[in-house]
Length: 181
Image (spheres, helix red, strand yellow):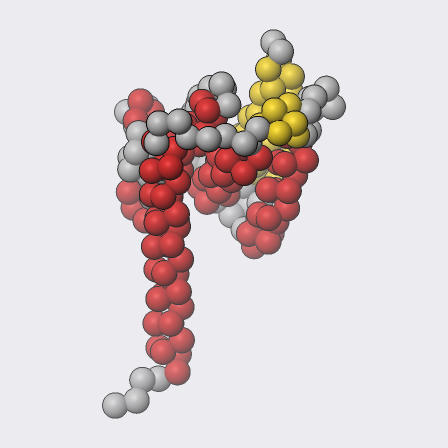
């Protein structure tokens, strides 16, 4: 029996989506495993974090346009170059931006900002997404925790993005916090 072309195309698209999710999960698991190793190596170089963030934002441009989101970046003019591992820190920032884009509805807003505060570089991201319930808040940086499983399954979340971001940021002697209304 011949499968209609539309059904065949839909099945192929579903296979591609699931394959991409599996690759993302494997990538997250490998990253978490590497970060867990004692003596994980960070390759610090003197970099401009605003340039790094702008590159990441550019990578999300097509998805932001597709979702009709208003995406702004306010790079602090006073933010100096600093010693970072650009590959690892990119991974952390990508995870945070990905969450903002995924969980902000079509037409919503996302803003990023950097500034120097108390001799530290502060990076903040704010969005008009659905938010996180108070009961879930103590757990959002735990591995495999998903505040809303149905929502995470729809966006392909593994529950590892925030723990990976936290571990990388801590590896840079930084801290990560979250707030939700």
